Image 1 (tube, rainbow, N blue to C red):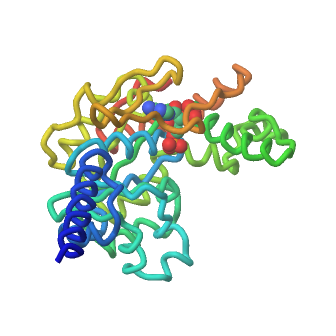
Image 2 (cartoon, protein in one colour):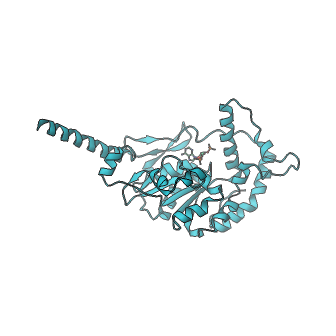
Image 3 (cartoon, rainbow, N blue to C red):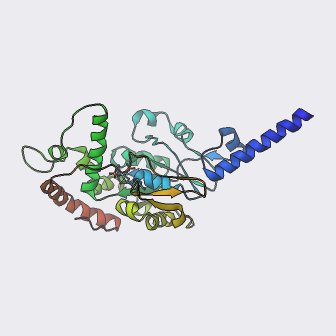
Length: 299
Ligand code: A3P
């Protein structure tokens, strides 16, 4: 009997700890505890489809501040990777976090936005899914993209070309549209492919530049788009002068900033190259504003 009492006490404390941790940090309970408390793995009701270097991680982490949102921590790469896609929808569901039925699950895989096959595949899973696209001024995004690749090369002690050499075709002196960092920033072209499957109302465009400087209004727009009550507040976001970015406050004990790989210093780029790129992107930007109904003060 004593053993039984002891066992129950330990179990009780353990479960209470699990629930407390859940409150503190949504992902901390064990799978068994989660099953016990009616948690399920749900397919995402919303996906951050891109754009790479637009602020996709910051957006996902900040939305996860909302009590009705649960994030898939890793990029799943289900729809853009043929091998993963071949594993089937149950494999994808198995990658999702546990959540209560009233919560919504969100995942982010920025490669989805630019990968040919993805819109059709997502449509086949859920034709009424909500799609989030976070964008930054296209030239800045391209330089950010370059900076990430450059850092990877430097880590392997490899030399790499200058941004200017990659972004401008040496023979024609025109913008090199074969360069992936340039192509990814032609937002309207990619979006047009998505619109063959989804109506424009199913997309919400997030201003990635404003998410850096003043995140709350952008998050409130997303809450509205997802039909969620407005819960994220200024309390949840505080500016960290050392990081130079907003960080996240979940509660009195738990707060966090994004990893150091978010917010790299960009190399200085030749001004004439910047101007050339801005001119190149201009008509595509206009098209993007026209399609989405959201205008930015990009050059
Ligand atoms: P830079 O590294 O160019 O500054 P992604 O998550 O899609 O890779 O985007 C990375 C970008 O998110 C970073 O680009 C950074 O500017 C931006 N970002 C937005 N909000 C941020 C935040 N609160 N903390 C860190 N980076 C943030």
